[in-house]
Image (cartoon, rainbow, N blue to C red; front, side):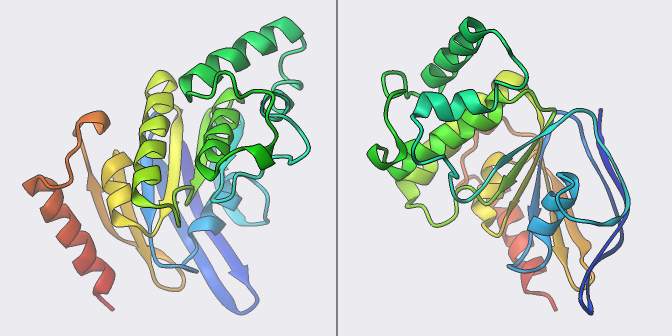
Length: 235
């Protein structure tokens, strides 16, 4: 089912982050929420995940998985044990859990690394474990809070390809927040830009091109990038 946000209102102190904000996130699509730092992007995710109080309604089906900017792995546990943590509550069969984890490790190209702890992993490997963990949990909704922020272009490109591969396998409903326009152009089915206080949608666009075939140097992407930049710079 679609994830519906209706009349969402959130206030921190005297600052209104959202006031009667409404939007429908389509089932199985990646919706990118663009906006400057502090505008309320992460607040929106936290409301969807029900980790902060809010007024209004958020209708969703099933659980929620999160991919953060930080990998948030348990440093003393192996890769395998970190992944197993999200399955123990939903799959009591040890053999079944191992089969799921082994399959996921192959998908993220980490098979053979399951005994390593976080200190033995590169930053890119740790973030792939975090992606695997999010997709292993049987949620209907996946929340991405700037997971590619601060990465060098080569590593970012590899991680985006890994994410697309996992997403294409299951097609969950994804809300992806970022301030990086090119990340949105590479991943989104829909892009919304939020601005102001309280935040409102100032721009919305749909991208139909297949994610694996997107070339940001194409004229269509260049035109959309320019529109997004123009909207971003408007007061």
